[in-house]
Length: 164
Image (cartoon, rainbow, N blue to C red):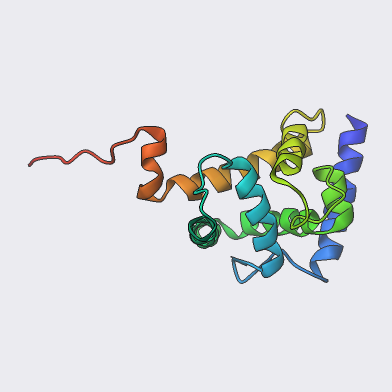
């Protein structure tokens, strides 16, 4: 338990310091750095759900990142600040290694490597890593399935029309 508290303190202090250099978010929107993190995380989480044709995949992920921006803008300020710290940490080499276990940059990591790192976060004994995973997972899933074109992957036909 003490290790978890120490880890949390180090990450909070480190995140605050790193945010001064390259923040993950600015004005409630992802920065290019933040978009790079969410691009890799999204491709790992949604592997098999995204289009396989490169141009369609690029278009789908760009639209997804825009929806993530919309989702972030709707969060309360304290949640935006915490998310910005998390993204900033994940964008830094030390934070990326500590939280997800990736030594290569997000752009250089394979989908399988990111998936393995996310899985290690999901089952980690350190609650901070599990919470970070859950935040990333929920943001990507929420933004992806908020688009009506993705509902068929769930077998959801869409909202029922109510006759009045």
